[in-house]
Image (cartoon, rainbow, N blue to C red):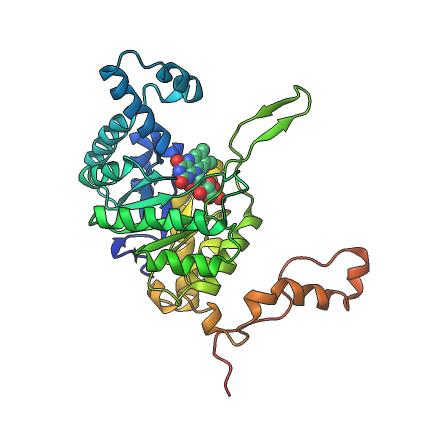
Length: 352
Ligand SMILES: Cc1cc2nc3c(=O)[nH]c(=O)nc-3n(C[C@H](O)[C@H](O)[C@H](O)COP(=O)(O)O)c2cc1C
């Protein structure tokens, strides 16, 4: 039987499937179930900068009773009153005692601040690695992409220098040059990258004419974005890649491994099918490996990365070429041609 174990940022994992950061990790029972189901590891939901700031304000408020900004802040973040940063750390300590598989602590850090201290505390609480979620919505038109990126790169190198466990960065797919930013993230010291973060987008309810804030699960189609960028960047930087967004099936996981990812983080699939889905994924990955004659993941990982395939432009021009070719297909005029890239791209470098 095939061996589906792998490693991510030097951490050994029994499976390439990691439970991504989400409210699934709010209950230690779920964390235990994920371990029992065979997950390679789990990312604990993020400790948000606002939680840390709110707590800092609380402390300040205790010291300076005259301050009136605290009640106002509670209106902004009412749910955080009983979930400050210290409680988060205590909760991580509790989770650590209950499971043995790798736990990755997540920090949502958007600007310099006290949270560096908390990165250290997450390490002390027993996290095997940290994941930096650099999510922010930049609305200031005067702020340049360079300023925003420089700020995030500073955060990465600050965190790296404050902890000794590996640090991964959860990237956004919205950079003018993902390749350039990924390179800079690697140079700032990141040991791993998660491609990609999925942002919580607001929606408008037309009946109530109000803004709705609810989580929206991914669609499987979305996994093509990380697939492309993992294939384009894997092997080019000294970092381990984790695929994330829209990964539901064993086939989806295998595709990301073929493109060069070491692991796949999944969340929506687990909300849809339950944590036991991990066991089914592990079995199906192992069956596929047996069928294809692979004993270990390393034997096929990255086989279809850009630098390994016979058409190195496949991941760059796939949609364009596909569109051009479909124009010659008689079904095109009925709008029936969509789906996979019609030209088969196989492993093996172009010679000459
Ligand atoms: C309910 C819910 C809570 C989430 N909480 C976090 C979080 O705390 N930190 C984070 O970095 N991502 C969070 N995410 C994003 C997921 O980790 C993941 O990046 C995203 O859902 C895409 O993966 P998927 O397609 O497998 O769902 C959350 C997602 C959901 C659905």
